Length: 102
Image (cartoon, rainbow, N blue to C red; front, side, top):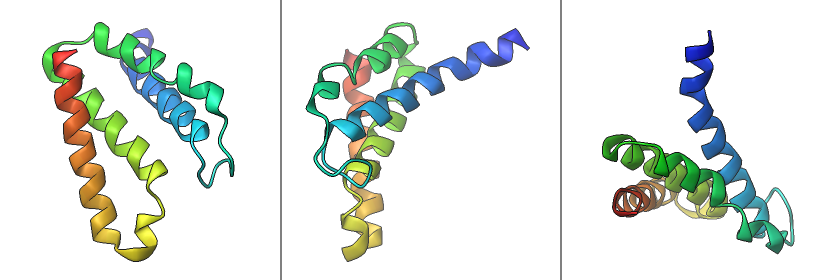
């Protein structure tokens, strides 16, 4: 059981980072955004990346980029849903590559 939670802990930190990123910008979660969270939103993500292998860091970077931009760019979904998904995938690939080199 302990091994199960240790495997889920990085995903939990990625979710926390995405949530902090989303509330630091104006979105459907908070209308004006709380800008102070922008200073700490990457800390859990960087903690996960530092302890991961290259393959896992790409996967975690992709998840972080996809979900952050999906929350941040939700307004695109009302215009073109396929564009929103494609841009989220591209942003996920971009952050996956950046997290490998970090």
